[in-house]
Length: 164
Ligand code: FES
Ligand code: FES
Image (tube, rainbow, N blue to C red):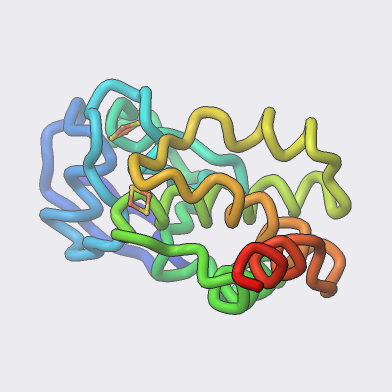
């Protein structure tokens, strides 16, 4: 039996110690917002936070979590960065199919928590491990900048210019 602190609540799970955290969150705790993509720590779909740090939950044994606080996509909106990121994601209309987006938002929120005004290089470094098969990368970068500054950046101008 392990006790996990998930989104501010203690959750108990009777699981083997080597079960990946992703399985525990989805299949035992019932939080299915975190997604399974590759299963080998290469795509970022399964990103959650441990004490605010982004981790790949598909390759993390639940026994390695210890007493660190877990935040998932279901809880990130309760943090200041998560609120800003989610609002910017909606304003920029980032999402296409949506499958990668939980991980994208978790990675973006962690970036803004440690680097409130990220450069393009900071964004690329923080987000490069999060794969989007729909290619929403330009909108993701725009949304991160918008979340950081509270201001729209250049994307709308480009879109409007392209449509004219
Ligand atoms: S499912 Fe964990 S990184 Fe792809
Ligand atoms: S929005 Fe479809 S994979 Fe990213």
